Image (cartoon, rainbow, N blue to C red; front, side, top):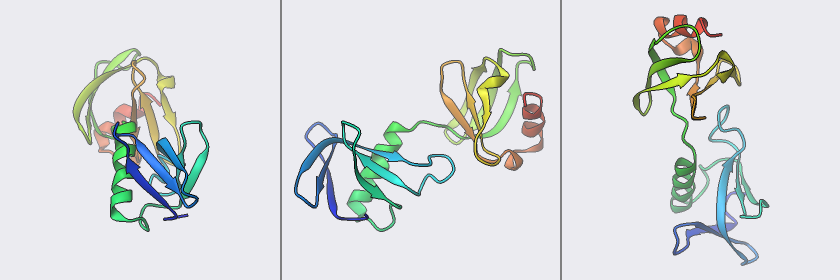
Length: 155
């Protein structure tokens, strides 16, 4: 289904969904089916009570305004910086502090233990800091040599 509905923002800034039947659902949330492996494929529009209102194979076939609303909502809900380089670590025993370059700028965080680095799909890794913030390494092989060498010490 890519278009038998209307999506707007209500006066409180939340998404409102009007289906083909004319029924309006407030506080609709877009949810990615595969946020890491295929972030642009398979998005559900879900009602506040958890029911799927619409399934979208992708955003390409949607009107520009609808696509923009969904992208804005996804961006506001999803915060997962992507690690581009590991600049340095305070030590190779945990807990330790990692200084990294991400797609959102340089930052540092504390890694509590090796179990906080999890392999997901293919060569993707999720790194969880001591506050539960997830950092994504999209492709270990795409990292520079120094970053891979540091990472290998923890894997």
